[in-house]
Image (cartoon, rainbow over all chains, first blue to last red):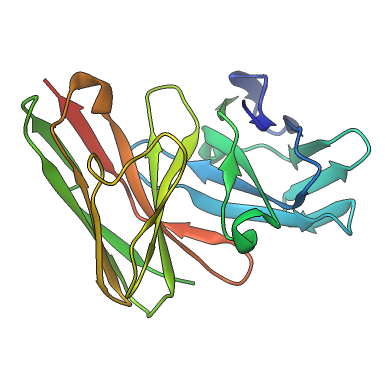
Length: 114
Length: 112
């Protein structure tokens, strides 16, 4: 049972435009959400997170939106840059496992083209 | 933040053999986590390694196949035992900070 889903395996965007990556979850006990970026041959690196008490969190070019009623979150990158080309994972945690366990989506491969 | 060193970074192993992956953290942490990422799949938690007690395994993972050691607060090992081609994956060590998790660079394992 995939509790965190990223339905788009890949996304291609032109440099300077907005990238929107989507993530859906099914477990209503999740209360904290994170986005990670992963380059080949490297471990995932943390990008941005959001708590369920918020609906938006912004950090530079990255903004995460959370719609709790729809169990949906999205990551907006604007403007997109070629260095943003990577696999992006959303992850969720909640009361299960004391809040330490992360459940990941399957990832979206973002390609930013010149 | 935490800096995690993981080795080996990659290996090619014969089926039926075992591989031990090492994970070193630059600070003391209570819990260390081991994940697996199979080709085209998400990161899946294998187990949580606690210092001074046995590791806690997730559903579908057993100690005989993935024994874990946690001798101190900065180090852990994961062994992939009696390997088969289905074990070909990236294995990642992780620790949890205040708000996010930090990962090692991963071990890319290919079983032939």
